[in-house]
Every structure is written in C-alpha cells, then in structure tokens.
Length: 288
Image (cartoon, rainbow, N blue to C red; front, top):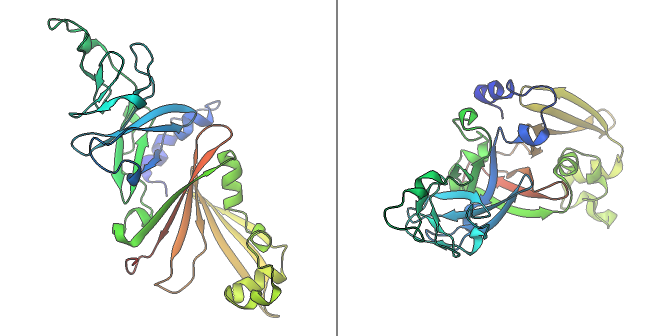
C-alpha cells in the first residue's frame, strides 16, 4: 500500500520517465534472508532491473548489495572474500563496505590515500520478516518506511515465504496474478466429482461459471478487481483481488480469522524473467 510519502515521491516522475526509473522509487524485495544465512557467509549473485549485483551479509550481520564488477579491473565480487565488515576482491584485494566505500587497498603503498577517492555502486538494504529489501533509486527520495503489508508487520512466525523464478516478464506475471478467469481452468479439478469436495462451494462456482464479468475500482494504492460469477439462482459469487503499485497482487481470503491469507510480489529480473515472492500469513496465530 502506498504511504503518503510514496505518493509524494511519484510526483517526481515526469512524462517520458522510463518504467525502470519509476520502479526504483520503491523498496524492492531483493533476497530471502535465508539466502544470506549468517555473518560473513559466501556472497550471492543478484540480478534486479537488468542490473547484476552481489548480495552479502557483513560481519555485523547487516545485508548489502554491491555492483557485480570491482571498479578496479572488473573482476566479479561474487568471488570476493567476505571478512571484517567488507567484501574483498580476490584480484588485487580492494575491499568495499556496505556503502560502497573502499576501506582497504593493499596493492597501494601505505602512504597512498587513493582508496578514499573510490566509491563503488551500492544500494541500501533493510531486513524484516525474512525478506531483504533494497532501494535502488535516488538517495534523496528514499522512502522512510518499508511497505506496510500485513505480512510485513505481523510477527515473523506468522509468515511463510517462498521465492520462485518465473520465465516471463513481470508485467505478464502481474496480469496473471489479477486474472480470476484462469482459475476455472489452470486451478480446476480434472475429476468433476472433486468440484464439490476439497475446494468447497468456491470450486463449484468457478467450475460452473467459467466466464466471469470483471469490474474495477481505482484506489490510491492501485486497483480493486471484482470478478462476478453466477452462484445460486438468487446470488452471485464475487472474487475480489487487488493490484497494488508497483508489483503486488493479493489472493482472495475468507471470513475465518484463522484462515491463511496469501499475496505475491512480482519483481523484475530483466525484460524476460521475474522473481515471484509469495507470502502466506495468518494474523491470529503462528504457523507450526
């Protein structure tokens, strides 16, 4: 959901601004925390918005993202040594901290101050509820808060997260995420007798009416989508989904307070691929 601050940031977008520039105005899910399991663990390759990066967790346990190529001779920092609160290039030993500052340059004489003139690409990161978030936009426009989704605010033991590579661009993925029509086919039961079984009445409605009528309502945070199907003779079944700027979709829930709720974030890797982060959470109690 967009905060007032994020809405203000979008006012800096002018006609002709690229989509990539727009997407960099938001905190981006960059990694699952488990991908960097402990301080000084091996670095990992990360590709976001067609940019090759290296993720690492420093000695103090803080996550960070640096540009893939060392600015000296272009060696990949993926092969670097993660030690003493910095990532050291294996080629000539240049070492960079989370902010991209060169903190050691052992191939220079001790009296040299050249390291103070070097600044590498680095993006600020924050961590919450199993996700490492990165901000890749102008520093003076960095949002003060992470997105306030319920799954990002409940206790960590109330949330289950997964991350999947999807070989389509993120716009195609978002379109699938808000499309209630495909559930009558892709998520249907091959055995018609099951349509009244595990899926309950919802499965029956999506099976018997496979051409829902869509209505949308624009909101400050995105779009509310209603897909209407025929239900009983005197009623309709409405399936309500949301698209939240810039890449979030929500899966319809039920009325049971203990029911699991689900949502996705579709994060661009490049023009042909994206990551799907899936969050399942329960506000009332933790998962076992």
